[in-house]
Length: 200
Image: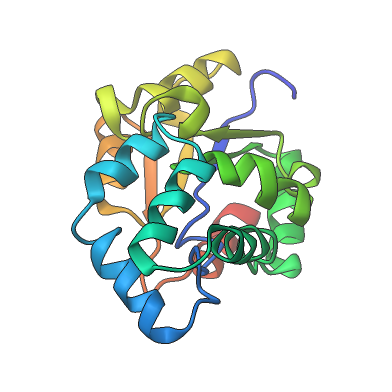
């Protein structure tokens, strides 16, 4: 991790991975979970992403909500975390950029990411560093994008020479407000659309 190279921050959910938690539940249960947990109880999700809850606690909540045995819900959750799809071709293209950039996977995520997804997908093989909001206690767009700024400073560069690729308009705005270059992923512009700019 050579000092002086600009940092390229890559988001996970919605940027390099489209998959969702508990996606293997029966459709009716999955929709109920989306409505109740990710629709009506976003405060709980936010607390989880900031380290306030464990995956076990949330899965007990989901088990009660669905009226399904905890062991069954937990098994689905872990398997779905371990089998999230990220293109190996994409990961290799990103890893090839490490000659020009420090490659940091900066994710707003849960304890399950570090415990199950990272090892199952061997993500440490492709990134110089992985920063998860769960262990930092804050989301990446909070406090004037402080997590981005802190990370860039550790590599000895200003945020103005760094780039973030993220699907969140809020994160992109916070990053750009601190002087960095933000490339927003949308349905029309996937991460692959931006890679030629970075590969030059």
